[in-house]
Image 1: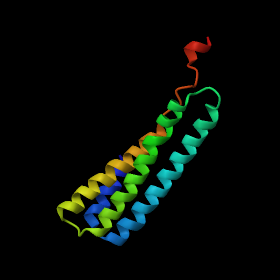
Image 2: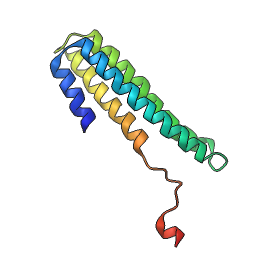
Image 3: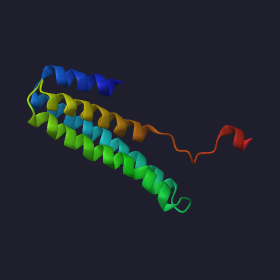
Length: 117
């Protein structure tokens, strides 16, 4: 929710430089968090998982990272208030949320309490 509020606030201000700076830092922070979480899960699953599981772990977040950078560049190129700007802001908000959600998922390989009793 905080990411969406940040995106809307940046869109209302209408400054391309501010959007580039703050949006870029949001992408960097969310991207580093995703990379840390995904690499940690990859190390924990080494030898236990299939390649398919690793693809499902890495690909959605990497796609969200690339699309959020593309959306940020679209936002800074178009003038505020134009339809392209509004669509780029919506795309940026959706992709940064997907990046945050993708890195916040719990590890499904952890045993549950019921299974350990």
